Length: 366
Image (cartoon, rainbow, N blue to C red; front, side, top):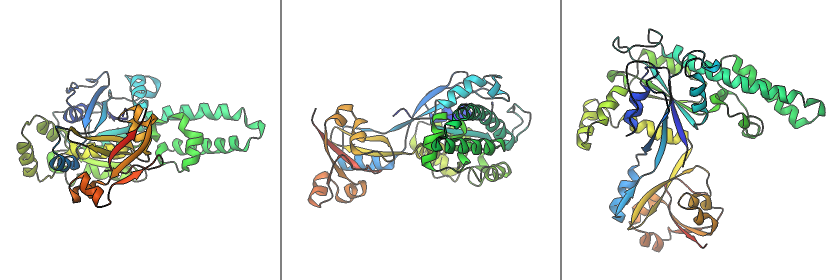
């Protein structure tokens, strides 16, 4: 799938360092602003322990995990909404993504220059929020103007849309993001989705902390938690410095030992990838055979024919049925044949809603 999450933040907060740890793509990480000019795209493997279990049972020739795309976007400065710095480029790049990973610097280090001279994650958050909100307000204002010209027709649907737009404008003029605006799903789809608002995108706030703050956070992260309380957003504590050390370790045992010494069960990158996958509303289904065990990415709520199309469009065009086993049942009984004998292999039609962890075989005829 082409869904992407964009890493954003002010210059020198650790975006590119984190991106380098996430991906084999190497964005330049340097101690000065705008070291990332073009957005770097990394195809990130999604960690999934279920693949390990399936490999043990099926013993395939190869195992293929699923992936998600992460985009490292150029740093932003005040005035971006008016084209200052790399503003127009930044806003255009972020508009093309499906979700936002907002990196905030929450560590003190005199050796790493901050673009505004001192560490203040709330100020940094507000700088980016303000620029995105200003761009969104411009879009809302333009639609309000278009709508007002048509109100004299007396169309009730148009009137309803106008009222929602005016309420959203008032909400955002208070310095609030569109994602915290209360509106029904139906009204959002009807009246707001065509605006592609930047602050409507789902977001994870990643607090880039020092080593000792990865588990419990610190005074900086406490302020971030308070600031985002009404946003319906996720928050993670990650040390980009630690992740960059882990990224260069080739041995799994070395990485595991390194994490254990720090009192961690898994890396921040692993947690971030999983959180991003969830943020994008994605789930995984599997195909499992001797040739290949493979994870496939779909959006939650996908029906069987559309899930089949992820493998090949012909699977959807000629869809006949799907043979489905739940992951837990497959692990319990140990094979497809055993699942079939136990009545745990179900034949599903075009209206079947695919569940996370389903193991599927598609029957089709083109």
